[in-house]
Image 1: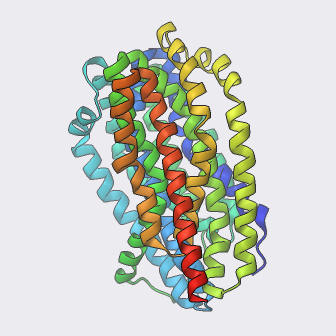
Image 2: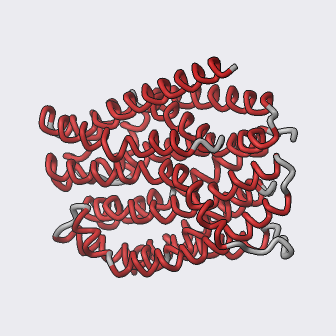
Length: 425
């Protein structure tokens, strides 16, 4: 396999940015219509939106890792069976998620800290978003499978088409329908991506579907799902502590900052997903040169763009508060928050890449430990300590501290793995 780097990298980055833009677009319209309350509501519901996108991406990527390794081993029919099973599993999982998210939206919103007017707005948004989760799950998953099926630019074109449709629908529905209107714009655009993607993807009828393969796909999906969903778990915890330390203005400030921070996050993930096909295939074929080339290029690109993102901080401070029409109190909080976050970007990029490398190689245990260490231990710990010691600024500092420790943990894992390999040789 001759890995054409740009063929996978560019569509992957574009597609991931589009996935992460849904709440940004909704927030832009709602912020100018409803102010801080609307922004806070969308930010609180964002973990539900992100769960759907991460579930789809996780299942799609988990299946893709398996099928590329099988292709590398020359097992083409088994690879097609994995793909067929992944397509069916996306639909089944999506329907189940839609039902559950609708039924349990109120307790979920309360758990995430919504109350009063913010709860009412968040409930309207969550009703439509949760009910349409199947469209988001299938859309994200099919785009991931298309990328690994050689139709990288087709997947990118679908993502861009969905984004344009989303913007147009928001412009038509936001003013009259409010929260339900912008949520409907997200669901409709993702439904179009799902249907068109299913038509485009190559299907081998002779390969069939194997239910037992779904379990293996689910295991492989755990790490990529986590990489995409962990930022939203972090967002949920941060919303809670921001609300406690600075009220609605702090949640509104964090909402706008997170639009930038998590857009960067999706770009990092796009780079990681762009090198995944080459790494997965080379693990099956044993072609070390392909894997090493992909790793070196991916690491270099991530290093460059993470530094550029850090230096973009003055620009973000200058225009984002005005673009989203936040209050003066929220704007003051953002001035310091963006500066604190700037130090986290290189560490976030490195940690994501290390996790992605391990799951692309099939090292599920290490990748899962690194992925879930952050939301289960690091971020909650630093949020508690930071909010007590520094108030709202301590809430912002938690991400930088957590990503620094996670990056160090990833480097330690690499050193241990290399030492074991040397000892075996």
